[in-house]
Length: 132
Image 1: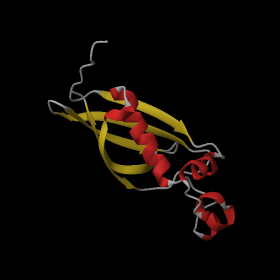
Image 2: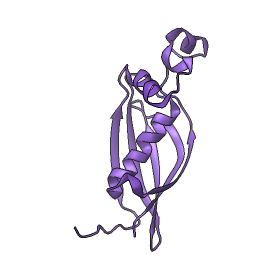
Image 3: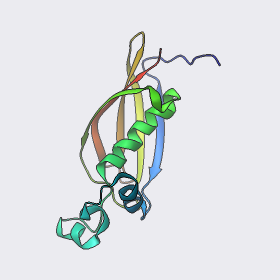
């Protein structure tokens, strides 16, 4: 299979929906049973309308966007991100990535993530992946 070529400026988009069960599914898979993710009353006490999605699930989706773009999750080498807004059940998150740098063996992509209201849920997301 021929290897794919990448160029600075290449873009990609990935969309994920946080269905109402996603925080519970992620809690079961990750062991993150923080009550803010599974107990609506705790979420309300924390100032939300109920539960919120685990930030690491949102981060995982951002990494998934890049791994799909480069064609292999095993190529991911480094991730940097700042969480800026929680993802709520029923939110649709759109990840938009752009290749910002290429080295002989590494691709760097900046990834933005916004909910359906256009509010950023991640800021400063940068993912590096091996390409050589």
